[in-house]
Image (cartoon, rainbow, N blue to C red):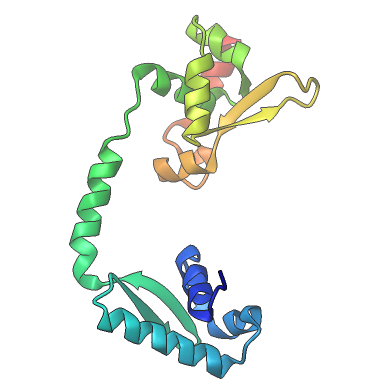
Length: 177
C-alpha cells in the first residue's frame, strides 16, 4: 500500500501536539514549501466538506491539527469522566509518599517503613508511570525507586522541593534513620 502525501502530513500533525513549522514539514516530506502549503489547504477543505472533527489552524509559518471548537464541551466532559476513574488505594498513596519524601529508595527501605511486602504496589505505580525504577549503581540486581516526571506534573509542581513542607518532612524522616 502506497502512502500518499496527505497521509504523511496528517500523521505528522496528529502525532505532533504542538504547531508544526511548514518549512520543516516540507523539508522532511522532501517537497517544495508551496506544494506542502497546497496540500495543507486541500486537507483543510476536505475536513470542512466532510464535516470532520478536525481542523487545521494556521499561524504565520506554522500549522496545527486541532479539534473543532464546537466539540470542546464534549471533549472536556469525556476526559473529566475518564480521569475520575483513576483510583489510588491507601497502600498506593502510602508508597507514593514514601518514594516522594524518602526517595530515591529501594524496595527493602519501603518495606521496612511499611512493614509489609510492596512488590505489587511498586509494580502498579511503575506501570502507571508515577514512579521510576533504576538499577542501583553499586549492585545492578537491586533497584531504587524515585518519583517520575508524570507524578510531578500530576501534583502540579516543577520539582519535589515545591511540595508543601518538603524540606521539613524530609529532615524529620532523616532523623528516624
